[in-house]
Image (cartoon, rainbow, N blue to C red; front, side):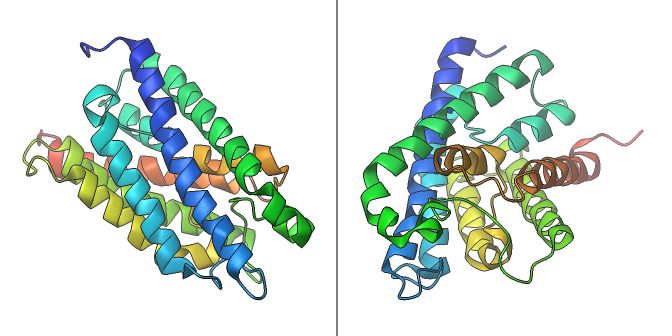
Length: 240
């Protein structure tokens, strides 16, 4: 059992998720504002810059609260770790509740900070309040598959650098942050590359944009189970 109380770990998860969901999605919003056609990825940051913002946010959150709550900051990560016996079942729902709370506060904070710049853009502005959705010509099954693949890679990295005790200490935050940055930089152009139900839920609630929302729950959770299980049963479980 962790020496830190569950309530304190929940607060840490809420704060860490707030950091991620404020910085990453707001970077996407800024990119929309600065784009001539107001399409995410076409602005001052581009998908490379947006990816770096997400990756840096994840990295600083891990180094800030990793020693307190392990910095899941993602319901899919919590579920993946629970499924492989790395997290107690009784704490899964409290962690997810804390993550969603942090994401909701971040979503409405972003709206308060940047609404005046997005409102003149009309519907396209508000639906780009850091939300995730399928890009034109991307079918729902393709978006779902993308979320499964992206999140499976993310969980595989997390298991390798943060769970496996053979990994070099001190580099988990950097490795996981750079993995997120790379995935968002190339994968964002398909479906926004969420990999995190909380990251999608907070901005969706703040903007009222729920299109294809189910994909960003089913895909990341399925991907987390896949990525965590592959690493666990291949590299961590003792052969019978």
